[in-house]
Image 1: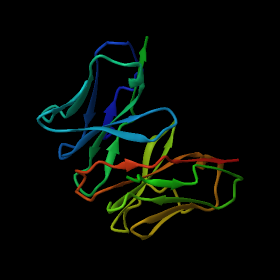
Image 2: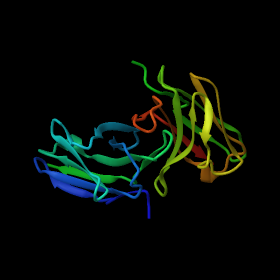
Image 3: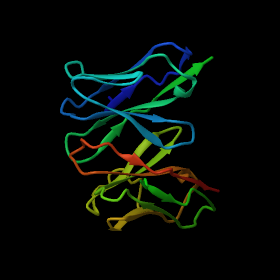
Image 4: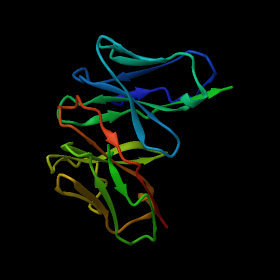
Length: 110
Length: 115
């Protein structure tokens, strides 16, 4: 089983739609989680950290469910510019090593 | 603020040649990571350093790959001799040390093509 698993998609949604991605992780000792965004032929960029209490940043909401070992990302009112690959990331239980999921492709269409 | 700086941005060379990739982490960050990304294998961690010391190099594919961090502001990833299967985008990232609680910040990457 992969340490971090994501549905690769692609998710094809119209502008204005709400879309949600889930990601599961295998290491129950993992403490920190992040969502990164990667545009085509660009570097991964931090989108948001994921806290146990959940957190929101504008149209983006991240949730963590430790009991079921998954994290989620909700995007409301999708924009064309949201089209990208979204990477789910968790830390290992030791050191500074982060494990990246393979990514979920989102395509927002007009 | 200056982010992670990588050079070169693109490298095209013939197989068998030595390739050196360079990275300058964000000032004040004491963890540095080298990744490789391909369509087939996604983003793979090759090696990471804490305070200039290599901590985990289990992702380094083979002896042809080596990485150094002589000081807090510079690291190199070297491939010698290079092979076509090494073609990929190589990213350097840095973070504050924090037991994995700190996010990593990526450079623009080096797009490597081995002919």
